[in-house]
Amino acid sequence: MHKVDPIKDIKMIKELENYVRYKSLAYYFIFKIGINAPLKAEELVQLTVSAVKSPVFLEINGYQILLSEELMTELDDYIANYQLTSEDCLFCSKRTARPYTRQQLHRVLAEAADTLSLDCHIGVQSLKKTFAYHAYQQGMEIADLQHLLGHQSKKMTFNFIDVPPQAAASIQLNL
Image (tube, one colour):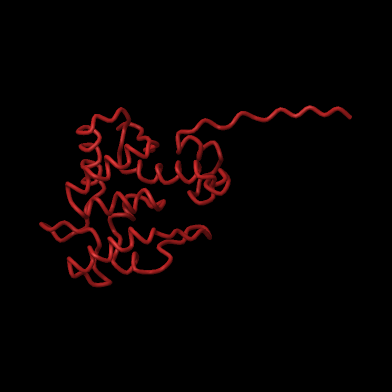
């Protein structure tokens, strides 16, 4: 299995978003929530309606993760359209009525990357990496990101988001 990459390019995110939306609305919402919240694949596919209905979508290590108003509106329409109740699984297979698996999601993302001829390795973990990469690019401190993701070191977080650690600043005292 290849190491997967974060999706760094916004245009590439939009292309993938359109592709998975074409595949199914459930995959689209998994993708959208996945790049907007630092969830593991298993957590993503196990989401219930009540989890996305609360004002604070997620709280991890003291950080409140909120979903955009636009995404919340789309999710509300999806929930109403499929007549889901608060205990229902948000993303269940129509055929088996069971939550999608990590493997199914990986296949869809790999197929999307192949179809769109992307020159990076995309998998389920790419969603969480994309969230972390863009949070860092938008000014979140690496130490805060490390804490949010539960990493042991800043180096681990830099590796996770595929960004080289910043070079140590030079200090020269002239006392």
